[in-house]
Image (tube, rainbow over the protein chains, first blue to last red):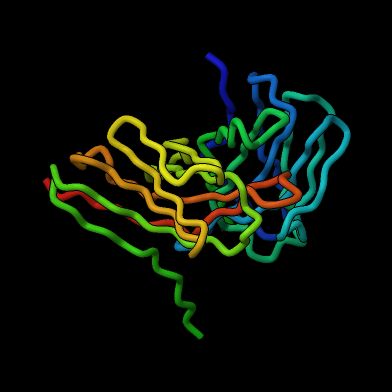
Length: 114
Length: 112
């Protein structure tokens, strides 16, 4: 079955460390997204990519970096510059025209700073 | 000082009753809307969508109503079941159409 796989499910980071969250999809979707979710808040867009080797900043890109070397993969690195990284991170993907398909989401990665 | 988190709107309903969850959006140019359901610790799941040229769409036990005049969206769940307990988000697609914008969500609790 096609879907989006996020790993790991739980991740612990020491202060000052960079960590990378994995997102892989086998849906042949063109666009991929990273969102951050904090308690009591809506999803906030970190980065998105509409095509391989291209990506754009979202509303809260500071302290994060991404790459899109393959259509199937869109890893997110949380750098030491992100001062409050503890959150639930969601990856999503969609076909070219979002009006017809909406997003398919992964199951999320919960990142905690220790 | 102590930080205070935001609290989600909450809705509690008896099993078997109908539920209505509301959402306001801000951009009059938004032309496509989706309701998502998110269970604890999981990613959001698509429930139902509606385009701006419609004012009502029905699915299995769910109905979405769109009022463009007041920029309001609602999700109606018929005969609510315990498995419907979750957080429900609305999302809208606005120009230039390359990303969805999400509401803060409503937490639905179904009382057996």
